[in-house]
Image (cartoon, rainbow, N blue to C red):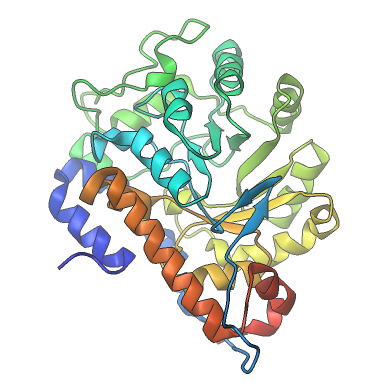
Length: 370
């Protein structure tokens, strides 16, 4: 039987992928408490639905950072899509475009940004890590802008890499033939930046991050980045309201409430629990188009309703797209997004919401917590 929900897509992907690849995508840091908590936190939120509101037709469209999208579910930046399937990032971008939504492309993509945007039929945003060599970082931004990306998504929650014990045990490395393609022809001088190679012990990705990415990144770098490009810059990795306010002060066009999918600081707060305070902190900026997104743990259409009711413009999903890609390439990612679309449509109808704006208008009145 074909998978009928996102959990079943993961089970099928687990049976399809080599152990090292599945563990890389599935794992969280240390005891994986935050990894688990990200979704369980949604389960603790009950929906207090409304009735007799004529939901005979429904509109799932939303507006995010000036983009009109057909589905308030974006693809989060995830590395190494070709580790899951040869269609890789091009297939994921094509699936996102077919669903009428946005794909965020990782710096650590197995496909060059120019190839992804050329294949895409919808918006592509570029996720950025800050390298110790700032010329490398600047060149990545210039390439993304030249390739037609619509925004820069600055990841700020990885000054060092959280210990992912499954990767350490498996001595994670990219197989022969797969590289970090955005680093193959980049300015600066960082030999080997396109390769993820296992050290004598431990994770090759951890060695890569320690060697090349900059733990000294600060709010000054956000200002530098905002001055480097005409593209809007979103800050990804915010779980504290004070940091959301600082992002506004330093030029961000939006924030993504994210704990890196539970892959960084274990026992950190679940993102849906962090969202309300952050929504309150940036409320004044929302009317001017400031974007508020969330990722981590979204697995059902009801999760999307809860996130929007608590203040998000839209949600982002990472692993589910990878599971779809592993199962059936581009077609699998399309199916994952279709499942979420169908579940969201049903949840909206049963909540008494004809549109995403209806969810937002009802807001906290839809939410009942244990």
